[in-house]
Image (tube, rainbow, N blue to C red; front, top):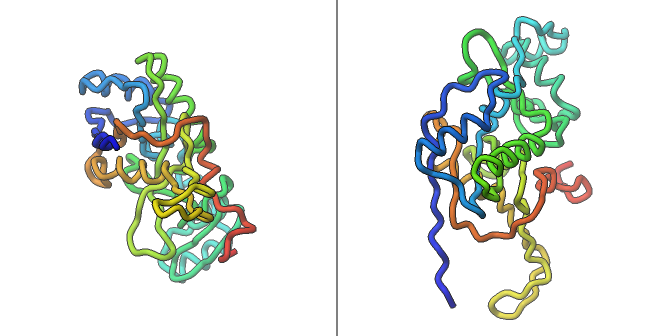
Length: 253
């Protein structure tokens, strides 16, 4: 049996502050070349949702939001900005729970998360809220195609964001958009080392790669992307939507 090749994770440094309308692919290509990290076939590039949203102008100035009476009441009760509360409600197709000032909702994409993924940190001057990309898979495909043209390499791309977890303390990374990668590795019907057939095991490899990348990016390091090398998981065309649990299998719905 051959030993697995060590996984390598490289922070992509030197990106400028991303502004609305910027060519994010061009920024990444420049940073990769400057850092002498030209992608190779099989590499995985993980990019933070925030810079994707900024480049796609997925942002709202809170001064343009007129809160409903319901949003005002909720905000007053929990000392929140009523405009942000209203925006969260608009970005939600289903409210899972509202308690202790937190709104857990299902976004129009199908993601279940806190406050519809609304982000007000490091959003630039003024009172601006960043939204999730409208189509994270499309965002990932666009970046992948740009990298393929620039480096002639088949690179998978993950657009990642920070989510909480219902059963565990602390935030972690999840894959919102995926291109060039099978998001879930399926072990069902395969045999374990003792010859027993597996019936339930599926691994969210795209989420795991997003977490690996975050170890060198981090919340305050101003590093919005990382390149992962030597990952030998299954490849193919996939979608971040494959990571959403079927409502029929959701015990909490």
